[in-house]
Image (cartoon, rainbow, N blue to C red):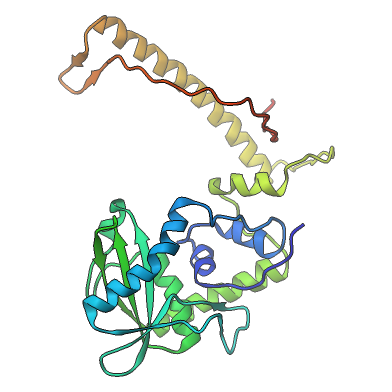
Amino acid sequence: MSSTDLRIGGTRASSILGVGFQTPYEVWAEMTGKVEKPDIGHLEHIEAGNFLEDGAAKWFAHRTGLKVLDCPGLLVDHDFPWLSGTPDRAIINLDGTPGLLSCKNTGNHARAQWSDGDDGEIPLGYQVQESVYLRITGYEIVHYAAIIGGQKLRTPQMRRNDAFIAAMLEELQRFMHEHVQKDIPPPVSGDDLDALKRMFPKESGRIVTAGANSPATVALNRLIELKRQIKALSAERDSAEAIVKAAMQDAVELVTPDARCTWKYQRAEHKARPAQVVESRVLRTKE
């Protein structure tokens, strides 16, 4: 079991509220020491964000003329010591009041989620993150410096919304009290399969008995039925594909009144890789 980490920062807050990069179950598992927090610092998109943060801040200062300052470090909420975090930068607004700057780096696929100005588009997860820091600092505004595809800079602003912050805090408190402090997991979803694999990598040999109407029984019955449907649909898919290919023979394209498809030759070379032994538990259903 890993050590517990009972702090909630901006990234965890967005995940707890269902708009982050993790699920609430994953956050609970990490906070209660069930699993180690994964080391993602080596991932290329994380490295890019870290290296480009300073560039985004300088680009923002150049474009807006606002003074950008380094953050003093970890900040902790005066009422909720578990609420903490380190904003990317601080800024001085044109009227002399302080504010925050959040530096982001993303690909062209996310360009529609960002736009400039007071009413600019900002992904909801990042609104939650910065609302945490507005709560901790008491500041009234956060600016964003979002580099899109390495070539575009978007600089939307978000003003403090006390009603939003209050609702966010209520949900974070509930999560801390109902799940972390009581060590009761939140509901799982299909996105939690990796977390469950990390939590329970080995079997103990024990047998769990579930009642007729228990969630596990209902889910298992549904899983068995879904596997039946998938098997039947896979066979139907293969049959339909065979009919199409038989009709095409050596043709490159088939055109019908409703659709079209191509059947083209392609060649791919795969480099030989050393054999690897992969150990994991496998779920098999039985009737």
